[in-house]
Length: 173
Image (cartoon, rainbow, N blue to C red; front, side, top):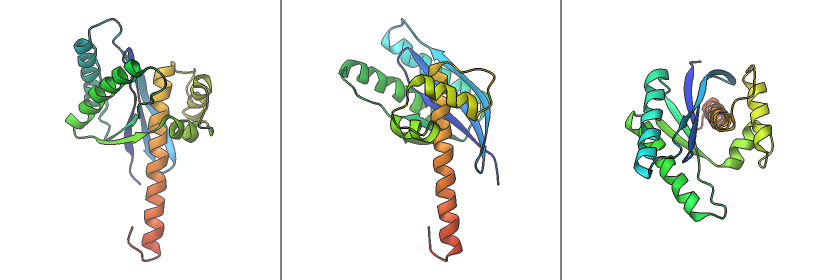
C-alpha cells in the first residue's frame, strides 16, 4: 500500500485553515497544519492571499489530493458569498497545481472525525488532537482543515475496499 498525502482546507474569508496528513490504508499521520490570515484587506487582496498561501503549502508539502469543506449557508447570504469566493480561491490554487479535489459537507466531516454530524468546534479540536496524537489542540480553523483531510482519507479507503471486494467477486467496480 502506498502513502497518499492529502491537503484538507477549511476556507474562510478572514482565516483559511489547512492541514496535511499522510494516509496508508486506514493509518493516518499528521504532517502539518496552519492558517492563512487575510483579515482586513480588500476583497481582491484577501483572495490573492488565500490563493498564494494554498499554492505555497502545496509546493512545499506536495500533497496529491485535496479535500475542501462545502459552503454552508445559514442566515447571512453576504457571508456565504464571501466564503464561496474564499473557497473558490483555494480550490483554484489546488486545480492550478493538478491536485485531485474532493468536497465534503460539514456534517460528513464531523461524522467522520467525532462520530456526530452536529459536533461543536471544541469537540472537533479535541478529536483531531487525539486522532493525530498532537501535543495540543490545534486552532479551530486548522483543526477543521485536518478533519476535512481525515474525512477524505476515510472515504477514499472505503471506496478502495469496496472496489477490492468487487474485484475479488469478479464484478467490475
